[in-house]
Image 1 (tube, rainbow, N blue to C red):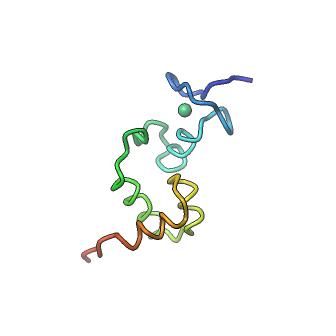
Image 2 (cartoon, rainbow, N blue to C red):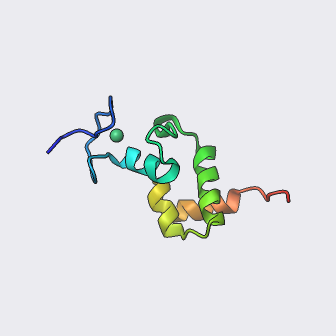
Length: 86
Ligand SMILES: [Zn+2]
């Protein structure tokens, strides 16, 4: 068993399928392990993903798991989200 994530140059410990948590989330969200630089991701990126998932009907629990924040933070992100213009 490998002790490193199977993504090149990633030194994090793998969790499932030989991928670390971060890359698993990236693939789940974008289908691309390098879709988002989570290490430098800004809050607004997580807010945007939270809103997009909420629009798709995802539950706060699912969003929290993917975005990597608590459910309470998901609700805070959604509450802070600006109203969309039609
Ligand atoms: Zn990784």
